[in-house]
Image 1 (spheres, rainbow, N blue to C red):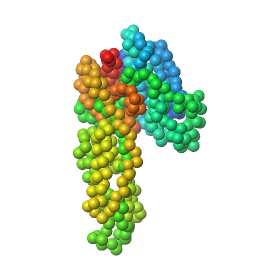
Image 2 (cartoon, rainbow, N blue to C red; image 1 turned 30 degrees about the horizontal axis):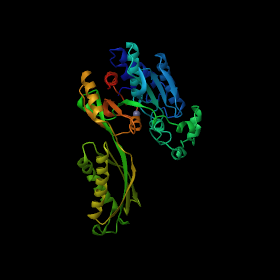
Image 3 (cartoon, rainbow, N blue to C red; image 1 turned 180 degrees about the vertical axis):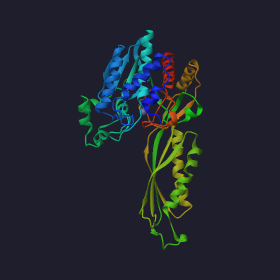
Length: 421
Ligand SMILES: [Zn+2]
């Protein structure tokens, strides 16, 4: 398989935007490049900072006014006619420990490319436009996630900050000190009071629906909220040799039945609902012991609140019915519920118009993963575009999106901002 650099060399670049995106993705990829040409830029690391500084330089080159908030989020402003409300677009530059070169980076550089094109054309947008780089989106450092964008929206409190410890034992206070900030400034967010007319984010799809449809870009129809339901099946442990089959109350056999039929629970809720069991503990967990107890966690997601509620209820009823039909008992506990972030119908309709004007076919995709747009969307209108991911892979050095696909997304989002009422 070709490496990232070989694939980049083979890219067709037939306009200025493609050339600029191509060379900038390469430049950012040098910061924290791993042996297999992936990226390692942890949130709040020197490398993430270096990448932010590089982009800041490009912003300043076209006269953008750049400032950084207490959470290390970088905002570059391209002046419009009116400052009462701002347009905003961006993403993140941090990566997972051995991530790819497009996740986040493509979004930041795309947002900047819109300003580049306006600058070249001498165009002034109706509203000032800010390109934003949110800190620590992946949350690999503190096991958090969307750290910068949630701080911006005032969604992180002192209690959460107190829990932050990275693998080297550093606290958030240590880390903020490195970027010239502190806890007080971190918590003093401005997103709540900021008048954001629209936040737009371009992100790689991290799945292969667009590839399957042979389309470069898709409209995100909503961002799913994750729910976690802990289900414990309690049976009876016993000797695997001496207990006859008819006298068993095997928790794992029932848990297996639960998992096998869980996909039907999700598909019966909606086409966008998903449910997964990725973690399970069997006890006593001995080769010659009948499992007495199985604890598993169902990760369930959907893009709107009602469907998400229906899914939670469906998972609970499913576990109860397994218990009713067998000798096990079930303990069911909803431990996490993150609300999905819907995308407004009129925003989607406006985006469809932009697709058509740009000669593209609008297709809708749900976002199963969280993105910075999710934080902003708790209060402000958002829009998101997905760019086709080759093979649907992400969070690995193999992650790849064609430059021409990213360019197409830039032109669509630019059109959308220019025509926003
Ligand atoms: Zn990302």
